[in-house]
Amino acid sequence: MIAFNQDDNDDIRRVYENFRSNNNGATLSPMTDAYTSGVALACAIELKEAGGKATEAEMQLAVYHAAMLWKIQELINMRRRTPMNEEEVEKLVPSVVGWTVIGHKWSLYISSLLPDNSIVRHTSLSLESPCF
Image (cartoon, rainbow, N blue to C red; front, side):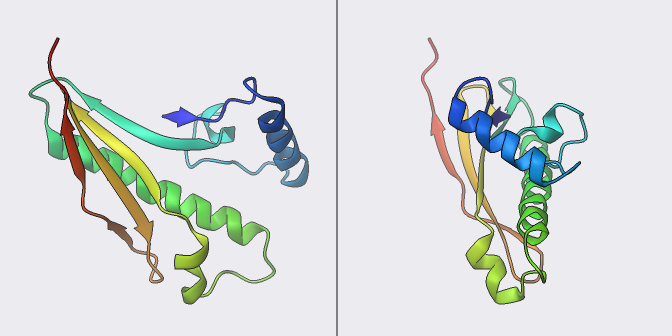
């Protein structure tokens, strides 16, 4: 996971402090670990050794993407008087990005939440780095 660390920047620290003071007990991520649930996660990178199973990495990333998209929707709805309607979902819930890395092959995935609460994965882009 790549996350926004509150120790790196005063602006980020203020955002975390503001969220915690205004949202008692709420979490920023779908993770269940005490620390990680309170961290704003930017993206995920699912790593497998060369020859590892790409479908396993893709499935793990898909599960994370679904959980993160639903968490973002939950966070947006926390600040509203009424939950988002179907038209608002696509406009307000941003897509999430992540990578699978199998050996030296990197594949980028972008996933979005649809109005019916299902997830769509957009076509992946793959890059293979040379071995050194």
